[in-house]
Image (cartoon, rainbow, N blue to C red; front, side, top):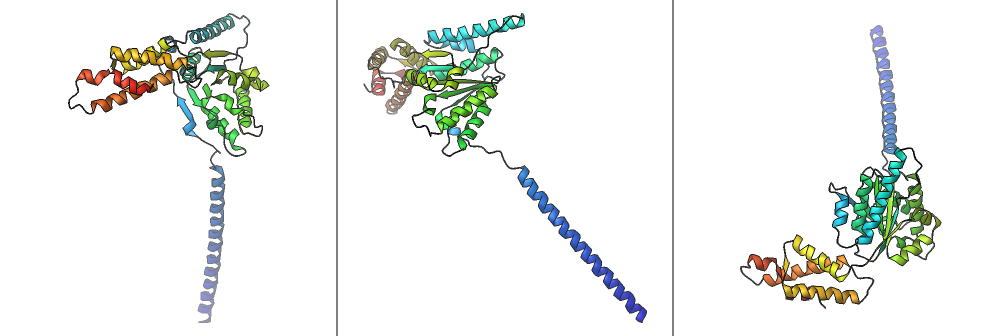
Length: 332
């Protein structure tokens, strides 16, 4: 009997010890898993980003011929010559390099100057594709932005925001509209941080990044002259003149043909005279081609309002813009 009790006691002690060991192992495993979870959380911390998609537009590369597209633009004769001259220079320098001749370093960064609506953004998209065709850029896409897309409202965030946009433009063109707004009179403004970040990236990524900045002529010159880094990198200017009344008329009619509309003779005469009158006012905020597009869109809206009172408009009715439509559209 005593021997049996001793066996039972020993077994109880062994079971107690085993339970203690299992408990200890479980605790160690829990601590290890917790440590792994904490370590995993550190590893998957996302890269800090400050995004503003409302002020960033990414234009993917089209398959159409950029040279033909450039030549098909209405007006802009001097702009076309400048782009063609730049293209020819790059081609000759590449040919010299292939023959073992000396070549000169050429900055591909550009300054587009001119009033709103003169085609700066359109030509920038085409230039990006021409640069791809010339082998300067691998992708040839265009990333459009402005001050709001580069500058943040808090210390330290502007550099992050600017770097993110530059990253998206690598192997393509970064187009900054109204770039002079990055350098206002306030020296504490975050725009200076954006400029410093941009200049550093232009140097670090000089083989995979082209920057085109645009804006009013006088403001852009002042902006470039205000910073030695900008002045040394942006040496090629292309000026975009205002459209003439005849060119604006051609643009207006281009929209009508594209959307299968036609102008009555009276309406056509009125539109031509309206462009002459508006240009004579010499307002630098005049929208040029943008103004012509807006007036066309307004005219077809007014035509729709007029035709809504007709029960069964004919095909001719649906495709005709009358004097009434364009008069109300221009509001002169």
